Image 1 (cartoon, one colour):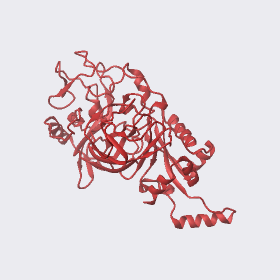
Image 2 (cartoon, rainbow, N blue to C red):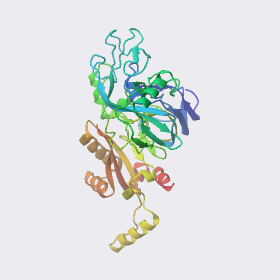
Image 3 (tube, rainbow, N blue to C red):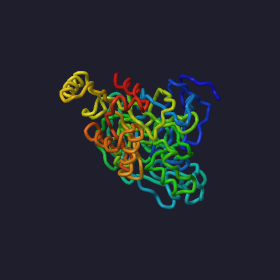
Image 4 (cartoon, helix red, strand yellow):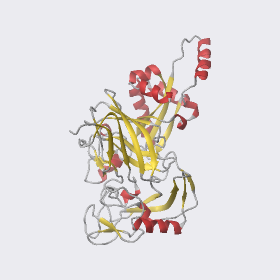
Length: 429
């Protein structure tokens, strides 16, 4: 195994992850990992060679990590690199895939699975099979739009058709940024502008971040609401809930200043990230959003012997609903005085955490989050529900079945779970 480093720069990208992790890039406990990410969804979705609709960084081996541990991932930087991006609702094209257009694309003319492709021109016909030179993208926009971004103002805007056409031309000419090792065709090649004039405040977030699953699957399927779709093809066996880490969350609080705690399922953890979004509201209503290249740096901390059923998030305090932010000293003093008026003694300190739940639909995801909170805390389901009603809430990552449960927990409960020190440190800043 390569010697562990306190700084790892990743320049390679993959689409399939899990089962194990290579040891050619090893990060020590407390070290940092950085990379320029490739766009997540639509670029890979129109690139038949890429399985699963995501390109993520090649997973990094974390020294000392074993199954049953967890990794705390401190997100220190998420800085957009892209000037242009594109997204939209999806429409599959019959005859160009088998089962799942993001997993098993097929050239209908050559019969080749995952054919090599090249770019010729712009639009839906620009992505062509290398062998037969015919257009073969397996899916496209039902309703699509193209966006230009200003790093100076942190404002973006959906451009009119002439602007989308010019950005598509620049894409075809290779003048739109893409990391060197990325294999995707950028979605801006489609040149779509089914609506325009929408101003956008940019709040970059990471859609897919965590440790690898214990079974080899496309990285976009590392979540309970998408993993079942692997049964539609003969390329992968659908993993069980215990084989995935739910790293593909699309939760818009997972940005600069937040902490993601991910379960470790294989030796070395295999920490990875990708699918950075320029911005996104709760729910990712369209199923896709503005995927960009971004300069990302994270710091890792190994949590030995802390077993999680799924991710836990410590968001940046200013991203929390103000009702559930950590209480100030003045608020605690007032609350403790009231508490003691009615027989209480010292009022316990409480801190908010977010427990991620996924499943085949919103109801399943909601119940999954509740059960994970019960397992994490040792509290009864009834108490979890009550605490999450007046001291928390359910937020939506994806309407397809990914949620997060915000809940205020006493310091004794967090200490028992092994998360108190991390949580106190995070909110003290």
